[in-house]
Image (cartoon, rainbow, N blue to C red; front, side, top):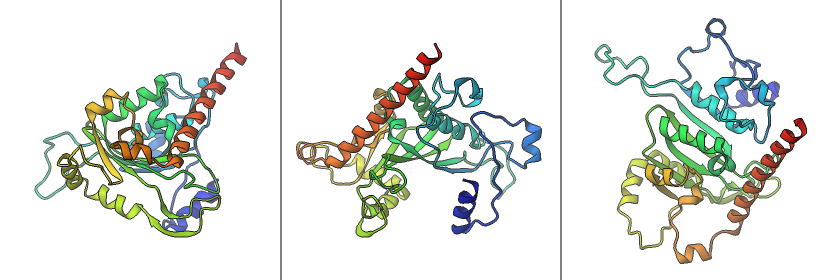
Length: 288
C-alpha cells in the first residue's frame, strides 16, 4: 500500500513525499513526538483524502480523539479525524504587521471522498458527525459522483465533500455529475464526449454568482442546472442530511423522468448501510 501511494504521488509531480506509517484511529502522538516528526502543532492547511470505506474496528481500540458515539465505522472515524486535524482560523481582529498576512489566516480546507451513507445515514453517529460538520465548519459543496466512477476497483456510490475548518455552514452548493468523461462500465477507461465536471467546477469556483442566480430563479419553472443550494435551516430540518438528491429541485416532469441509475445507486448505498449495521449487531451479539 505504501509503495502504491508513493508511486501515485510521484506520478502527480510530488516526488519528495514523506509517508508516516501509523493507524490514526488506534494510536495518538504526544506533542513531543509530533515535534520530532516535524508535524504542525496547529493543524494542517489542506487535507485531501480517500479514506477506507466499510471497515470496522474493535471499539476498545479506538482512541478517544476520533470517537463518534459508539460507531466503529472507519468512514465516520476518519472524517472525524480530518475535521479535528485541520488548522483553526485566526481570531478576528488579530494584530499583524502592515502588508503581512495573519499568522493563521483562514481555517484549513478539506476535500474528502465519502460513501453516500455518510451523507444521509440515520444512525446517531451519522447525525452527530454531520451536526458537528455543519455547526463547527463551513461546508462549501458536495459533489455527487456517478455510480461506478471508481471501477474496476469499486462500485460504491460516492460523493466529494468540501469544507473549511471553523465558523458554521450557512448554505451548501450541491453538484451532481451524471458523466465524468469516461464510459461508466466495468473498466471505466473509454473516453466519451459527455463530461459534466468542467461545468460543475465552474459552478464551484463562482458559487457566489451561482447563489445569486439560485435566489433569483422562478421556483415554478423547471430547474435544468446540475447544481443547486440548500440553506442551513433546510439542512437542520432534514437531520443535517448532505445527500445532493435530497434537495434537488423537483417538478412533475423531473420526477417522472428521473434517471433509474441514480435510484439504483441510492438503493445500493442504503443497502450497504443496512448490511454494516447488521454486521455490527452480529458482532455485539457474538460478544454477549
